[in-house]
Image (cartoon, helix red, strand yellow):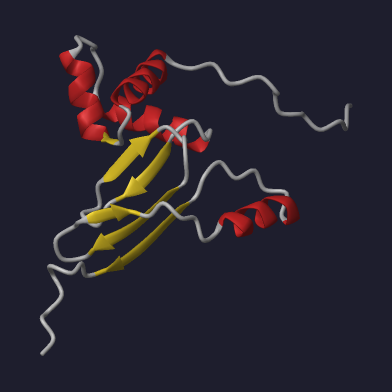
Length: 139
């Protein structure tokens, strides 16, 4: 009886056809897409795929760090390639989302990765409040 633990494979996992199609679509669009948008685009390309299959493929890709997701205030998730970390200011009233270029937690990410021996694929940072147009006028 062997007591050696099973080591995870160092090679990348085999991709399903649906996962490959989704990754290709996200590369082509160069912007975050919702699961529904991905589904519609694949169907318009003549792909026979169901919405549940799209969600399963997105979930598997996200868990492997191949894509990242961001949930909007409406509850809808957007999916994108993990090309960079995401930072936003989001208005709770109108839904306006403004990207923040500066990363205030970059050092923390590096420290956590080293100290906790945790492979971090990406991070998101989102501030919620009211934009200038939605704030009640003072005075």
